[in-house]
Length: 488
Image (cartoon, rainbow, N blue to C red; front, side):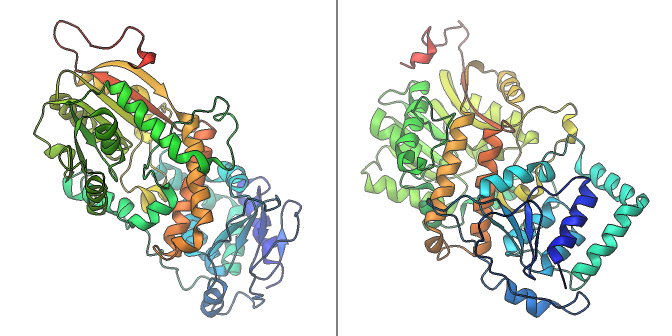
């Protein structure tokens, strides 16, 4: 096939109504799109056969070495290029247009990005994510109807079919969670969703998260760090995570002998810090067996088994209150809208009068029609099955409806962008070692989702907030200082 890239670029412009924002390099060595930068390594296979033959053997050869070549710190900048390694990538888009087809191609190694990953995702964001508020089913129906009526799009579809060849229909990558049925956020379904994301392997998470083993937004101290992300931010990641844990402890007003419940304790970093630095007796709960085993070993190694307990337990099954304080750091995104009121009420019931809750949670902007909200298909199928984001205003309202007095809200949005860039940097530096612990597809999922999420925080598409709430007793004495930002 001659000039596959040119044909794909022209088809993309026809469908989008505007030039495709990044350069395309196809399996036949052709390139098209914005002007190229320095000539990079291509990994092309030189497939020049026409589209009428079976492409299985060629497609397999094209992706035999499909693992990404992550950019190094001293790599010279070059314009981003979408690498279409084989016609199977085109078939994925033909049979599943949109975000899910692109995600499958990326995870399988049929698609890759050459050049600056963040620059490429920034340019592609308008194609992939800026879709307005229309719900997915209505959007897909509208797109199908428009395509059926528009002769230009019908012609584009025929051309795409000629390039791709209709068969065989590519199977989804094994890393994909299949479509689920039944009610959301049952005990069993939540356990399976948590296992998909967190039971990837502790060795892999050590490479990505670093020695802190904290999988939530860090707290960066540099005054200008939030406005100017540092390329070597990973060097200070451990200290920034320690600062976040200490910030939570200070907001909760922890004192020796108090009882702390950490909901979604991960690998135990919060309970360890609180017990070691503030002298509390802590209980951490998680649904991940792998996390629990790792956390218990850390507790034992620290000599804190008399003060820290790690449980594999759902928050709906905790019944040994009252606690003086509760931390929930990066867990509430898994609760879901249908369970959030229950979640807030249960945590309220587990606190003593005057006890504090620190709820650290990712948020999205509100939509004019909230029933139109849908989780991105890539995130739902590959990253956080059944995860949901809510506007921070709704979170505050539901905490208040449960009886809490909300006393403080602090946005850490820019801090999360820095944290994610540090994690991406860790993964890229340790890529070869990471592939000893997870499949190339799984590693590609993590690299893409963390880089895209970093941009989402930086561009204010999503945010993250710490909400401090108190179970204020009847007389109205909250126990908080008049100037809460001192956190004494």
